[in-house]
Image 1 (cartoon, rainbow, N blue to C red):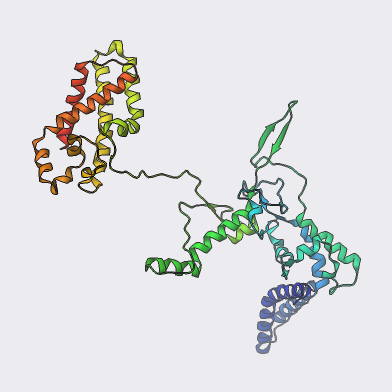
Image 2 (cartoon, helix red, strand yellow):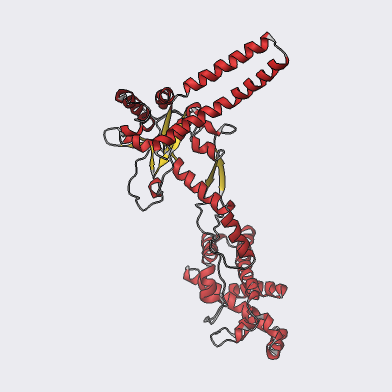
Length: 433
């Protein structure tokens, strides 16, 4: 079937849709006349027949195409719409011409861009006419290339064909460039107190492509079959595709067709993909290669908290005897100890006996602290653990590590401070165990 024949078929289908209800009414009225020769029924029948004749006349290809060419200015083919920003916005809408993709995801990344249509919803039937396709070429393509042969089967009047083409080409022409009070606007400063007014628009065609991809991955038969195969741990030729953390934005409320044609096809829904940075999950490993858990391991993980405590101690050196400052200092120390015990609690997930590895350089005391489940497989280890002397060594290691960090921050600590830190840590360690 040629593209001209498809146009004729489309017009015929439109006529039949309009005639269907009228012909049903005519049939009912004729049956009613068989039962009763009522004058009122005759009048109604005459009106329906007249309506049928008007429809048939209106849908004669030449008349319908002439009317369609006049109505074409009521709609516009676009790739970027403005009514997505606000339903009452009336600024410029853009039909972006095909260019080479820039390396970024954009409208030009799509192989076959599906154009959106905005304007009078009553004239959206023209979109279907202009998108009629034959061998990869649409009616709109022919109109833009000024191909008169497209319409020759309907009339030999070249002036009339030119009138049709000039009317249909209006769907690709934007109105005068203008912004609107309801649109998003960026005033970009230039020299001499001048500026560019930038109008960011909604990429409707790109958004529709994303919507269709997500719908395909969720609801197509192939996707459903692939997910079922995955659940059964079976092979499937079609991959399973998931879009995590997708949000839905709606446009147009109960009348999505007032925004655009593609928005109406999506029933107002538009998918938003998450652009949040990845939430990396730390993959904890046993502290191998360290001579002490505090050096390097906690040096790295607790840098912020130790610096915070050091900064506080510097700021209150002359008021360190006041109770309020002592309480705040104690709370910051307990915060560091709490972070340490949180990390140590996570280490209990490691396989029992990891401290027996040759690359574990920790002291015996810290092995007893960090690998308590080793008791189940090592009697000597269990005996040392139950003695409890190792706790004092661990507490001293903590105090030595923290005071060394204070010294790096130019804070001098004596034996008294060391003993106090060791005592606080030992008390918490004994409570934990």
